[in-house]
Amino acid sequence: MREEQTINIRGGRILDETTDAQGRLADVHISVGVIADVVQAGSKLPKADFDLDATDCIISPGFVDLHVHLREPGREESETIETGSRAAALGGFTAVVAMPNTEPSQDSRIVVEFVRSQGVRAGLCEVVPSGCITVGRTGQVLAPYAELRDAGVMLFTDDGNGVQDPLLMRRALEYARDLDITLAQHCEVSSLTAGAVMHEGSCCSHLGLPGWPALAEELMVHRDIELVRLTGSRIHFLHLSTERSVEMVRQAKAEGLPVTAEATPHHFTLTDEALRSFDPVFKVNPPLRTPADIAALKEGLRDGTIDAIATDHAPHASHLKEQPLDQAPPGMLGLETALALSLSELDMEIQAVLAALSWNPARIAGIGDRHGRPIAVGEPANIAIFDPTSEWVVDREVVASKSKNTPYHGRRVRGQVRHTIFAGQLVVRDGVAQR
Ligand code: DOR
Image (cartoon, rainbow, N blue to C red; front, side, top):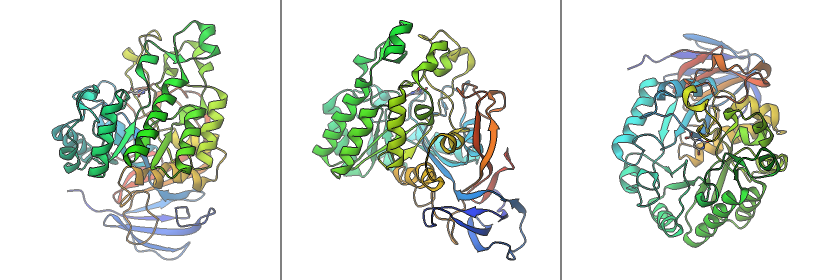
């Protein structure tokens, strides 16, 4: 058992779902895992083990990432649950949903319990295992949802693969509805993307590389919206990347269908032009797209069509990633840069960015009882404290992740996490992980 800590946070501005967009200056006392007191700025607080300086900072609920690859079990040369959790904490995340494309995959109670327990052991954030939609993510046979739900799994996905068979997806949605779980789809019609390394468009034609057409995503978004209409089940769309996908989700929401969606920072900050370098660090699935797609994703985030910013943090060890484009695995790091890229590149109020980084994804993940909560007395102390104006330069040599595949090396960004508190424990202090 860890010793309980007491923590005071002074000089910061609280911004959460219940404040107005400006937030309010207040000091906070944390004890025994919960917010024990919120007082007028400068008032007396009880003595504490740690006194955190939050001058110029925002005190917000910790962030929740619906989409991370922690690679354990099976690919520990790229990341472990401990190193990925450390990257998460440094990025201000207090919970992450671990994708199921581990080896073995997360399609049984024993594997999800292992993932969860490794997260508890690391103690840096809550690691929330997702479960597979199909056994082994092969798209053939439904995974044992009831068993996995009894083990606490709320979100199910075959991420890395889309579920190709519409009948199987229909049945999956019917079970999901009856069991009150959420399916999350990686939208990709795989027959249209075989061998692809980048977005299909003028840049890819120029380079003579095989392309991944926007249609491969959009066909599945369309199919699944229609299956949601048929079954009444809810669905979450992972890493949307195209203008038409956003428009379809907007329309589905306007019709009242229970759909939610996420976008990644790399899809709203980078385009397919980056592949002109032939650098595999820019290879990702779905691929980087066009300025028009970026504009649509940003508008989708602004108007609430896209509920969440999720990183698709996908570490790959150098010997795997640094191969020719056609052989390199897709994916890039995301956890340590998500806040800064969002604040730097999205023309949105900070509070709206926090909705997409914290309380919206907390609800989608089914953990809204303990993450994304207001900074108020009695609430669980899962908190991010960040300076929204501080500038820094991304450096792949100092990332906490075990892999180095950030596409942002050398980029100047704005917004820096200063402290992170998870379950009442100070896990990041002055930008340094405490465990
Ligand atoms: O780029 C990606 N990498 N997209 C995925 O869907 C899977 C992920 C991975 O596991 O590396």
